[in-house]
Image (cartoon, rainbow, N blue to C red; front, side, top):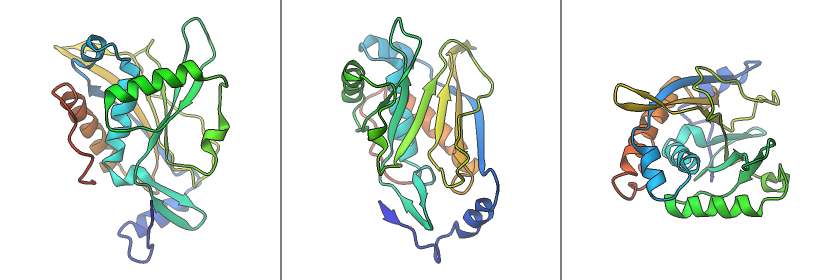
Length: 220
């Protein structure tokens, strides 16, 4: 993690402009091409949801704007983000938030998720958030193919943790499209960066099916 020098930061004006807004948050929903990913995960005994969590975090870790956070009057840039995602155990109707670190290997991440889910006792383990804001909050609605989602907010303007949700895969013209929603803070993330995120996510979804992912760098 490093502190940003606001005097030389190329985003200084945009940051200041959107910081004055009462609600600097916005969200975008778009279909992303995940063709073959469900079959790939199933063949390896992985959870598709865990793989989507993994790829989402991998994509955001490749784009600086999703890793900025505001702490008081200081802007910091995290080296990496990690997921905190909703999980609904079979037979239950109340979800749990699973929070864990995310490495660079999808098989290890899937195993880590399954172990954390088995060990989870609390619905919301608030101790995992103490002193940290290097997260992505993630949920899924695999029962429906939606065209829009709003996320829970505390209306704290400095909150820059991205919120992500996806829905049910849909077959269309030989492709498998996933409704994908991301909510961001305009102080740090513009439409350009949301578009870049979705493009990166699609590229990683294809790359992971071919072998090990390329290294996280270069930053975008």
